[in-house]
Image (cartoon, rainbow, N blue to C red):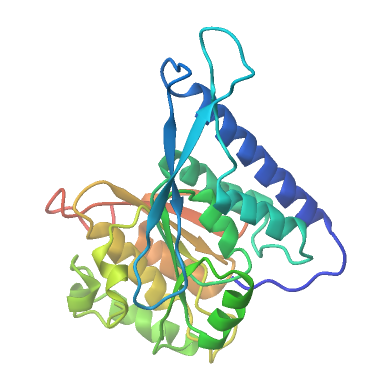
Length: 304
């Protein structure tokens, strides 16, 4: 999820700023016209995400009220809504930096369309980067949690973006073990749906913060850990565990996104453990899978 510094304001940055302005326009329109009849005495409240980087303190929300626009006349008076802090911070951040997210506008649009439908929701992101503020803003009012392998990187991001909820995690796999791990993943114990903490499958990630397992995630983005060289941890376990978390929810479904599917590990493991039958879309280097609850319908096969 980390991005490389670019000199000057480039085309990606301009497009990203336009993208946020477009989202903000949609937010205002929905706030003004999606609710029933509004009168001068009508007020609405918006939950503002007050997440922070921590390994123990949970996410909290605080209300923000809006008031009717006094200058508008007529029987239908829309509500004046302030720019959500998460969105305002994101616009300011990306408008004043030369660093843009690693994903392209088209790739970002794949997950942003789902966030537009589901937010505020629970959003789990494998990886922490300079695009993390964008994901938090797109999930305004929800809970967005980041899992990062590099503790020093968390501290570096914290200095620039202190209002993010992130946890330091570790992996015990290497990219060069991918073929062996794929064989392990084909065993019967890896087809059993349950809490990853108690799974007998070697691919399941265990001993992580309880929030990872106790929350039912509506969206999961796998854009980490590092996976571009043989000695890197690779995303084998992250992809498998993301699928297991989705299958183990009580009901409903989880949208899972895997980035960098042009690479061998991300390509093969996403198809094997998130299942080609659950694949909804691919745009550039990102794939979107929809994983249904397997607890809601017993006997459902691991892959359709």
